[in-house]
Length: 154
Image (cartoon, helix red, strand yellow):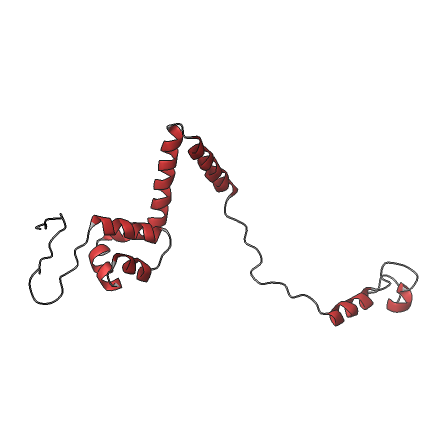
């Protein structure tokens, strides 16, 4: 494939009728892997490199290896960042060591606990008063038998 004066590849249909065909570049592929690693959608990623979603799929993810890279982009990105952080720590950078230790501590704790998905509904005033009246005298022997019968019968 020929290159222009700036080193960019020249599309095969250059100078012919119609729009020039998109030429995939390693720089765009790296951008896509980073964006997918950050959890962006296909629409966002395609817009970032200036192509449509079908064009992005055709030129960048038609190869099975690239599909796999897209699927595992988040893990790959995290692994690469941890590797760089580790190398900086080995080189003696204290801040890198501190950040690495924080990441290790966070990973040892495991995923953050998930709270209740549905908020519990608070009882209304009338329901609280009804429950309080029902429970009145259950603990003592003074009013309990008069209100609820002999103790032991619920």
